[in-house]
Image: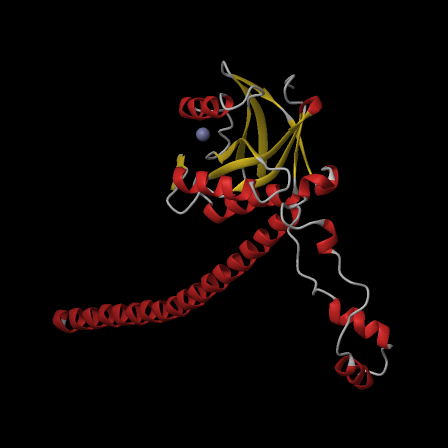
Amino acid sequence: MSENCNIIVFSDRAYNAIIDETFSKHPLETGGILLGHVLDGGIWIVMEVLPPGPDSVHKSAFFKYDEKFVNYLANSVASKYEIPLSVLGLWHRHPGSYDTFSSVDDGSNLKFAKFSIVGAISGLVNIDPDFRFQIWHVSDPLKYEAVNFKVGDDMIPEEYFALKHVKDSMLQIPTEIAGDTEELCSYSEDMNEFSEEENFSNVNKVPDVPSYGDDTAAIIARLDAIVENTRNANEMLEAIVDNTSDKNDLLEKFVKKAQRSYMNLKLLKKQRKNAESK
Ligand SMILES: [Zn+2]
C-alpha cells in the first residue's frame, strides 16, 4: 500500500473495457489509458479506460499505443464530464504469467508518474488461463507499490457520473405522456388483459439487454464461445475418425485379399514343384 494510493475503485464500464480489450486482442499484448479522479485519503477512481487506438501495435510480447489517437480521445472523453477526468495511468497485458514490469514498462510508468505529484497507477493483465488483474502505484523516483482494487459503480459518488451538458433534471422521464394517446388506448383494447396504465409502462420500457458490468458475465460469454468452438472442432474430428475407420475397413479387405493371393501363389508353387519332381 502506498501513502498516495490506498485503494483503486473501477467503474463497471472501466473494468469491463479492460476485459473486453484483453479478449478482443487475445493472445496478443494490448493495453489502455486509465482516466478518473484522485480523492482525499488516497482513493483513486477509474471512470474510463481508453482503447489503444487504430494504429496501436500488438505483438505476443510487445505493445504500443497509438499516441495521437489516445491523446485526442483522452481529452475528448475527459471533458464530457461535469468534473473533468484526469489521466491516472495505464494498463497492459503481459504474455503468460509474466507479472512484473519490464525495463521498457519502467520507462513508460515513470513518464506517467511524472505527470502528477501523487504519481500514477499501472495495471497488468495475465491470462493463465483465467483473467488476472493486478495494479501498482508508481512514484517518481521509480517505486512500485501493489494496491488493492474494487469494481463497482455503487462505490463511486454519484456526482462523478454527471455529464457536463446533461443536468439531472434533463435525464428524468416525465411521469405523464403529453399528446396523442388514442393509439395507445386502441392498442390497449387489442391487448385487453393489460390495464391502460400497464400499457404505458410497456411502451416506455427499454428492452432488457445483457449487461457485462462484471467480469464474470464477460468471461462466461467468452467461455460459451470457446465451448461452441470446441464442439464444432469435435464434430469435425468425429467426421475425420469416421472417414478413417471406413478407410481402415477397406484396407483390411485389401490385406485379406492379398493374403489369399499369397496363399494361392504358395499353393501353385507347391503344385508345380510336385509336378516337376514326378
Ligand atoms: Zn510490459
